[in-house]
Amino acid sequence: MPLWDGLNNILSHGKGGKKSKFIVKSQNEAAENFKMLTAEFEPSIARVYLVTWNVHNQPPPTDLADLLGLDIDPSPDVYGIGLQEAFNQEWVPAISQPLFKKDYVRVKARRLQGIVTVMFVRRALLPFVTSVESEITKTGLGGFWGNKGGVSLRMDFMGLNFIVVNCHLAAHQDQVAARLLDIDSILDSQKFKDADTDNILDHDYIFWMGDMNFRLEDTPYEHAVMEISKENFPVLLANDQLNLVREEGLAFENFKEGPITFAPTYKFDPSTDVYDTSPKKRIPAYCDRVLYHFHDCAYGKTRLQSTLLDYRSHPSYKESDHKPVSAVFDINVMSKPISQPVKFLSEGLVWSRQSPQKVTYHVRRNFQETIGDWIGLYKADFTDFNSYISYVWAPTSSDGVRGGGAGKDSRGINKQVKFARSLLERAEEGMYVLCYLTFKNSLCGISLNFLVC
Image 1 (tube, rainbow, N blue to C red):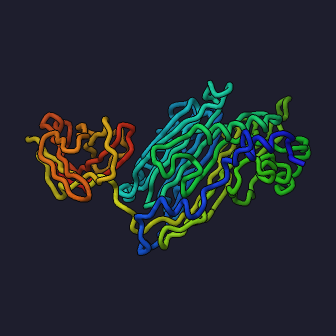
Image 2 (cartoon, rainbow, N blue to C red):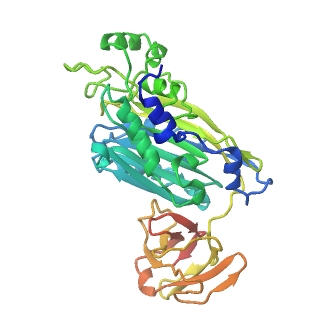
Image 3 (spheres, one colour):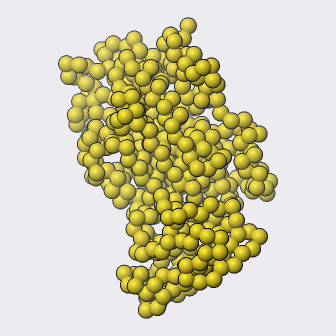
């Protein structure tokens, strides 16, 4: 008998008997998306570090080293940070600063009220990043309010693609059906530009995390606290609502979760490790989770594989009524990924601030330029795409050139833009790079370092 009668047909099979949204694409279908990749491409490993934390509208702590795993060796290649109830605007800078010092670049940050998702990539790997997009879904008040919902960031990375979904689902013990409908709404509403990965479940690697708000069934408060004191976590997890709905096939079909060897992460008295002693005595629960999925397919010699290395809570942080949770993965990627669609050709240059400078770049034939694309001048150690020194708009016509000639070949077209002398006045002497970005700040090309003097 289904755990929640009546939901099985709606949420497992879809409305009107449609196939479940959690039935993933076949191996052949996925492989079609990468016909251009040849069998000579060998697999490599990239490390992904994920954090989810409902911060309960509290300011960030002064030390985030443990939360961000700054002592991990080897260091992560990608960070995905998901916050909930992060209305305090200090959170994104607080998370960013320690990662900037470790030479990470913030490639995207997106906010839906208190739901914040931020992604960082190691600077050396920026040439293998493109198609960065974000989407939001409001699920509060029937989809009209963003206090609950999901914020996702996706990108093509090292020849493959992955997405991080950060969610805050409906609260309260008895709202399982609402939580399942929230998941359904996020899957239905989030669409992306890439025809091969136009929805969440089409991505090669999917990481779904957040304050999912699933609670413990048939577990009195006193019993939960007693089992926690004995570290008898399997007894609690047997009644975990998320585990039960997954067993019923109501959500996250084919997704995985690592072994939970830590205590419930909700709900704590302020500034303590003591579970709720208020008159409500909310039952401890594993609200904060990280799930993952990868498709069973291979592109040449690179077979998709996501290996969970670590899954833990961080109980030393007492700012919130939740404890943060982190997960570390090694994923298979291409060792020789396809290049970015825009390649700067004027390498090894020295720019003088006293004269205008022309930039020549090659646009791959199948790249869809759009109005609003731009080329930014950045210091070589820039930290995010909003920290440009100056910029020019990129021409979008097939022969259009702002400031110089163009040339075509079978692989694409060469274009040219000009940085006027007035645009270089803010540049101090030092090393710089050029970045080609879309109007939504998705990176499409990055130059080698060059000197401005």
